[in-house]
Image 1 (cartoon, rainbow, N blue to C red):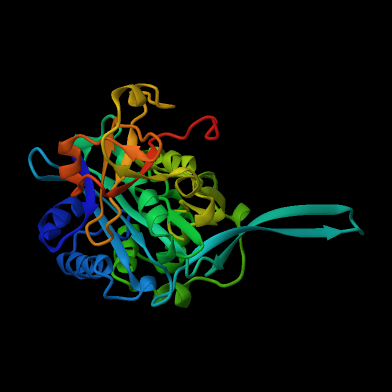
Image 2 (image 1 turned 180 degrees about the vertical axis):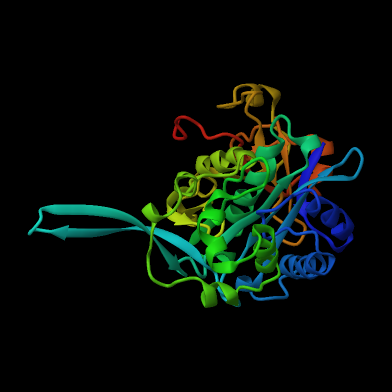
Length: 352
């Protein structure tokens, strides 16, 4: 069985191995042992609540309980840009007109922006290829929404997720080659590595502050603005199911879209419910609304320091849920404890 749980100090080696498999384009998960060790220490302190909420970095790992293998990782950063700059391009429009020659033009532009500073960020989502089957990806991605729904006071009102931008099979980034290389004079992977370790001052030093006209870029660079990496497309769809949307912000290096949402408008905030572990009559379970074996439930404990979440076929009824003993054990729960529940997939009509 798979469980998503709060990361611990013992996961460092497995986290490093996973980072070696990610590839370029994900600045928050690089195969640098010091970087991983430092980040894991922050994550452990975050779950222990020994640092301020805005400095926290909640990291989760997906563990295969059958063999102890770490199958995936994901994270939530309490707030971005408060200790180091957080840059994006904001897509805008400039209008030029001349009555004298009767010309009116609308030009799409890119503005270097710090608009999203202070937002809570979903990041570092990676699922090992061996586990990219069934509902595993959904479990790993959506665990973060149930965590936010349980502890909303720990996060800012705005939630964002930087999506990995489009790259060709060779690893070439058309957007970077069409724009960034002219200013940074270095390979995409090098720039990516610098930002991963917090070296971002060169962005403000080298990038122009005035708007960049999109029409001046090569066509292949224009075509990928707001487009995700092929392997990231499923992750984008999952986030959009939960309430995130694209509102014209893109990464400054690969032009991947930045999705955003208000925490209060997330599906998990609207539809997740608390239920008490206890006996439920078999007939009640059978008659439970939406008790569809093809749509399992996300179920988590309510323990911040030892957060754990699984997928279950058990459905809550009248505020109670009859979790099998093995699932209680995995969640570190017992009868009488509360768990938070949410359907894995959005309902067509959640009010029915």
